[in-house]
Amino acid sequence: MRELDKLIAELCPNGVEFVKLGDIAVRTKGTPITAAQMKTRDKSDAPVKIFAGGKTVAYFDYSDLPAKDIKNRPSVIVKSRGVIEFEYYDKPFSHKNELWSYHSERDDVDIKYLYYLLKTQESRLQEKAMSMGAFPQISIPDTEQLRVPLPPLEVQREIVRILDNFTELTAELTAELTARKKQYNHYRDELLTFDKGVIYKPLGEVCEYADYRGKTPKKTESGTFLITAKNIRKGYIDYETSKEYVNSADYDTIMRRGKPNIGDVLITTEAPCGHVAQLDRDDIALAQRVIKYRGHIGIINNSFLKHILLANEFQLKLLKATTGGTVKGIKGSRLHKLTVPVPPLEEQDRIATLLDRFEVLTTDISIGLPAEIAARQKQYEYYRDKLLTFKEIA
Image (cartoon, rainbow, N blue to C red; front, side, top):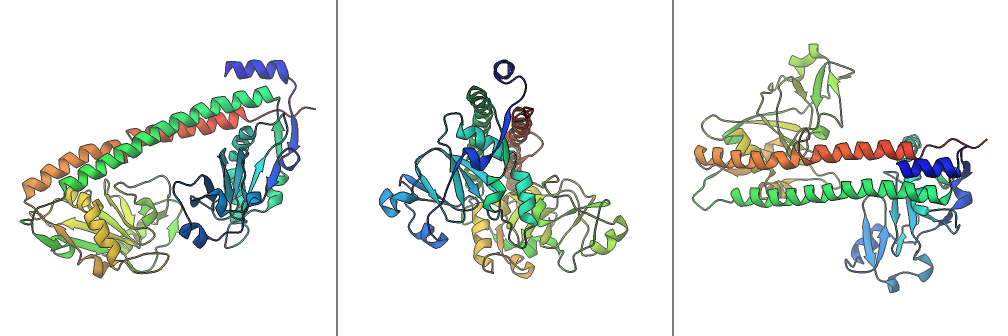
């Protein structure tokens, strides 16, 4: 940071010029290709990366696309529909026609500096896109007309260096978390693979359950926290991403099918389907598309049940039982009939204890690697916004 402060004091002490993005960057078009073509013609080891909206990508050979549609300059890709976001790429690429990208041919512009600047505009552009109708999207003028600060090139490069270091550290932590999760999943599935002597029984026989189907409860600004399918992740409950409440006076009516206890196991039946978590508090209400299971005492351990429902064997069984097209779902009556292994309670307790210890490292959002990654991301965003805030020269 000291080097950056020194450069600013030396090269632009009175502020910097603000210019339109379209005046300093060259906008390029994509290639006419459909999602179906990207899927069927994808070659995982090919050199040209094709971008679509969201995380959808494909890889083509040079001969698979018109030469004019292949970009070879480091660029910022504008994902303009659905989830509005920007992505930097410095290898051969192309993208669908509804996207566009920017590179610069000027000696006083670092394109990665522009990428970091555009990342600060994502939230604002996402809000604008949501106001455009049923399908969120932005138009070319929304980026072309953006006024951006243009400090001297040395300042741009120092900012890029600082932010690259933040990004690299977060990427290393994320890679470690991914490896831990893979290791945990392998360990869990190995522990939960039983010989032929273990009896399998339907969920509805080994648990009491409550299905919260019916009328959506009226939401309020405060009251009792409402856990919806959006809060249930793969192994834990996220209380931060989605915060909804119901009137505490209506609690008994909303939870008439069965009130929650700490330790109860939740599974989502749609949007998304098959996410599982265990309740760590009982001062909550449960929404539609969530089913609550409580193992019968002496038959199945709730913590063991949670791990069983998360394991690959049950998830594949669940997937085969789902119905629907784009949005997969399962009815409670069908879910209750899916079977789970029921080994002796001593074995259940042993397995649950081992997996609970390992799970803390990967899925607990209050400690461990996920919390460190979240903290680093907040730190990165804070410094990014601070570094990219300039006084406009008079």
